[in-house]
Image 1 (cartoon, helix red, strand yellow):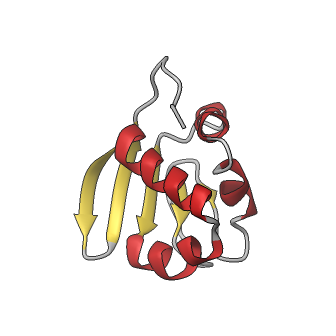
Image 2: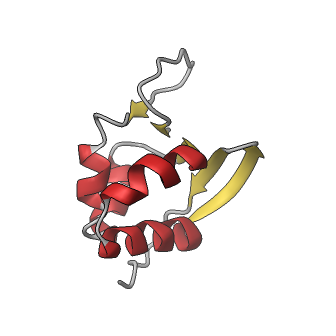
Length: 103
């Protein structure tokens, strides 16, 4: 699971890759190439993304250039399925397939 909700600690019974507002270099860097992002997530066993979408809209997206914002939106809309939502908290399952993302 990838957590992107700020620099908050959590106790979970599953492996977690956490990106916080000051530690999101990896995720931002991978948004340059969606196939690279998909490969990174798959190679690290990340199957779900849990995020506060209000946090993403306020703190993550404004720091990205237009191409990365577009790539982020494309990734969320084409390669994830919304599993659960509670207020601004969204849990997405990543849909890994054999196809590559068209940018």
